[in-house]
Image 1: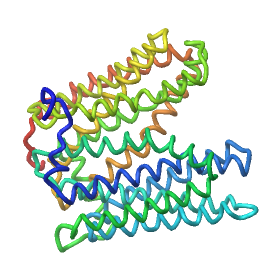
Image 2: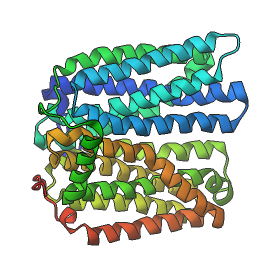
Image 3: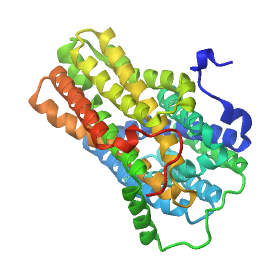
Image 4: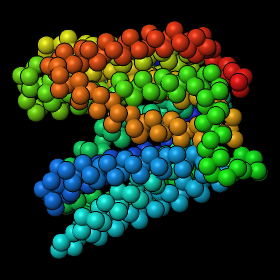
Length: 413
């Protein structure tokens, strides 16, 4: 029973056996990857004592993830999708195993961590893009928003659960055990992906890889709705950046300590989970474009509330609202993008989505960090949120077709 039509629509899980396998596989995979987000920096700092090395490993993985996401789009439209996901995750699992064995050595090698970051980034980019491309083929068109909400829920649950699990495992058995647990979870993921069933790439005639990528970019640039959704994604990228200002904000604006900082860091995930769990209404929307742009505005408004808050409770609510807006934006972008993309281009368009997800926080963090050098942290957050609201209003003016978009797919223009 759906509470007032708000509760998350779980029909894709009930009616689609392949989607159930994909959902479970993705959740397990994200928990494993999230554990490494804690273990890899912890081990790198333990071995080197250098935050620069920690940043170097993160940057290496980010670049590899970017490349893997773009390449994954071409692969998704060219090769059997189930097998491509399994090969990519198998490579990642082997990488986790190598990290565990390296950790058992008397003197673990830092270069192995860097190499693993490259492999894991490439594999994650490929598997994430291909999985996004295949998901819309598993559910009816009218259930794409519901599928997007469930996919978003796996991301947020993974982000909440995995750091805590990693901390417990590292404290009890060390980073090597964490790596081995992640490898075992990857074996489970690869096995579950078998439940997807055959997922051949659409069509029989395929362009050379670079030309295929250009074809996808041309489609994205010419189709008014797809172009608009990707432009909204750019704004979402910017709106996701100000978390970098939180330590200074907690210290200077709230006069609080690490416990408050930890609470505020978790607030966006709390809001995002609430957004996913109450997303049942998104599948019944008629004005999906207007709802999408309103959700982006909610992200920006959350930052404004954060900047104006003088108490931890208000700051938490602002950040939770920011996370709520982000979750709804992701759900609606997923549904609109997939409804308006033909299957033969879905991999390449999904890769553009993935690239925005991969680079979003980094780009936004750089902009917010520069602003934080010139202004007090609360003022910087307020200015940043206000600027995002203004940009949202500008998009409403510029993207008339997206604002007026209904739930029906638009012609390929």
